[in-house]
Length: 92
Image (cartoon, rainbow, N blue to C red; front, top):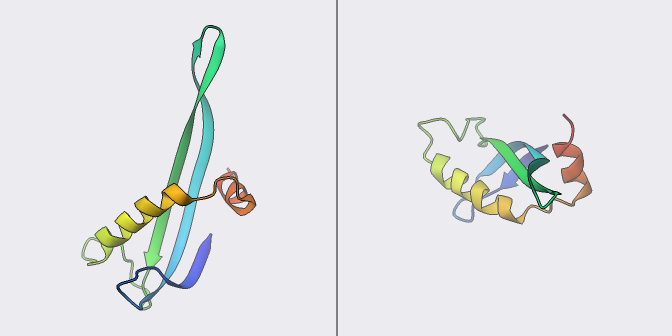
């Protein structure tokens, strides 16, 4: 998914272009008393460019850590039952 002209940070009026991808997969773990148990893997990645089309995750970026913390904290609130999310994470 790609979003353009998005204000991400409360501390800045900067608009960003964001590309995200991810995977949500259920996998078998162990059997307990004959019942199969499952785990879940959720992975996502993000690429962020500022309004000058500069990669915000390059090593010299002053926003790199702030954006990483933002995405790490916000991924907890992703609605994994959302139809668009399902489509994007199951395109493998």
